[in-house]
Image (cartoon, rainbow, N blue to C red; front, side, top):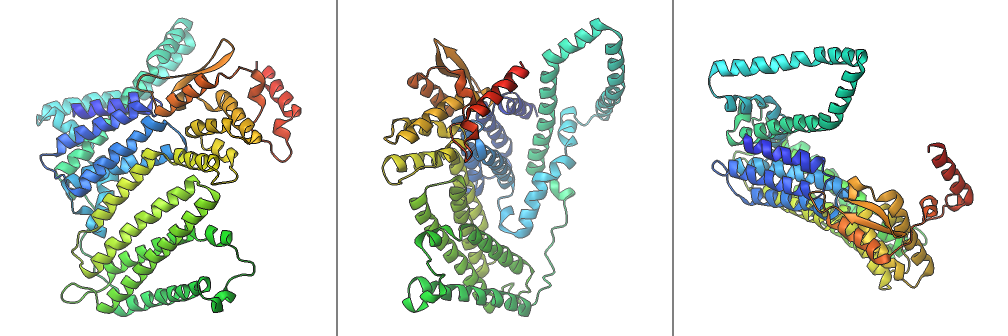
Length: 524
């Protein structure tokens, strides 16, 4: 348990309270190493466990590259936790993800079982001696009882004496946060240890929910009818696609229908339809009665295969439309995330098509492995960074005739190095806006806790330093170089000027400027 306390301490002190930068990446890597060492004797380094481990390490790199920036940081945080739990669970039970009840089991193991077994690490550290266990329980009980009583006593003493009040305030300021971090460390360490112990010794089977084989209440007639109705709708959709290729079907399209209208429709609807199809197929495979060979009827297999093939075709069409749309109108975070999500959905559809014909095929774990890796790579390359890089380079190369600089500005600090490139573009308006963005970032967007640096003014010039410890991030370093190279003169008036004018131009007017100065003067 000592190593897990160490790993939890690194997570808390240098990760969660370290600005989500290099410290968090290293903490996750240490935790992954400790977990792998603990589980290797009882575990198996399968394709899934190795892929999940790689996903954990890759997605956590995002914090070193980009710090805490936008949706990419949220996605990396969630993905790192998912990859880590999948890694630990698959090390001890590699086949758990190849069935619906296995997925339920994974959910139980990751989200519920550690809390039920949280006392196990404490018991193991104390040993089998009943007297020692009773003593530990007595100590913890005394601490719990003292907390509410001492809270009242300390509050009364603070009110009664100024010297004691000063001592309490001083102590709270100096050690209060440290005590909080230690408490969080112990809590996380207990849950982490309970989680890995639960997996290593398969303890969740003692208190898990019932995962017995289902009674399969659905008859073949129900399943065939349901799948046939869906298939009929999808055949009608395929028939409608002739309007794009055969002149006699052009009347199906609205009047004045353009390339832009075609390219911009269907991305999110496609993913929803494909996901619905996947859920229906999985549930019907699980609940439909089978023959004496434990196989689905041939007609059910055929209909499931058609719907799966339609889903893949539908997704492929949407991805092609997305590529055309991006090529014409540029990239956004949502467009790139949706594209990757559609590819991952295809992997699961293909995995379940194989299981339709061979119910014992262990293919779902490959789809999970593929999905974890591609999403981890997405966080490592950076959603916002990729969007900014593509749009700026497409504009500067002449591929796109315009660029939405305000959207780039809203992407966060990972877009800053690419916005800086626009300062030298021939378009004077874009160049001026890029310069205004750099100035505005200095005052309002470069927060020390987020991007790992500090703003300074030296010799009348804006400068930016970056942390060289566990709070370091590559993007913070790049931003510091921008201010070092640009040599921008410091001007307090820039603080009140938003780089982009709204319709009313209020935010760039003297009225807004004066009101902001009044507010600052009012609050001192």
